[in-house]
Image 1 (tube, protein in one colour):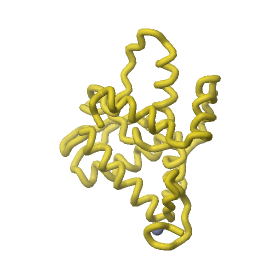
Image 2 (spheres, rainbow, N blue to C red):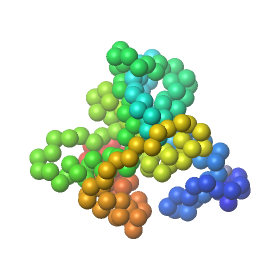
Image 3 (cartoon, helix red, strand yellow):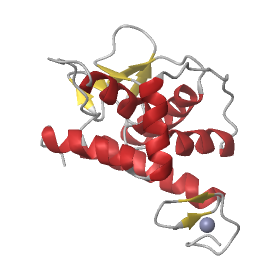
Length: 180
Ligand SMILES: [Zn+2]
């Protein structure tokens, strides 16, 4: 049963907390606001640009940005006048990039939730959470298949055996960047 309202759950966290459809959507939206505020991603008056390539991450990003812009008095634009650019990377896509980059020597890539004017509102969400949000909200998206290489498959396998490992990798980055 949902831990908050005793109806049928649609999602279970690794700590076994369960949420129903509407409590999950509320959790997701609250967390988006928390992430944007915590990492100072955007403020009222900002012109936030984004791309919607119609993948599930993109449609969710657009949905939550619309919600944020309305509440925070920011502007969503598709033109080049943006002072912030929102990208749809998630906990999964970030950890995937991080682990690939760590294999290289002298990596210069940065993995913080905010890099100059680039912001990542979905930074602390798993793909499965983002996908579920898209489905509950009935957002239309295209299936985009990404080819997974050995490293990606290895990380996915690790996550299956040790849930939370992706979160631990991102938390490591936040600690390095003094953002925790
Ligand atoms: Zn509920």
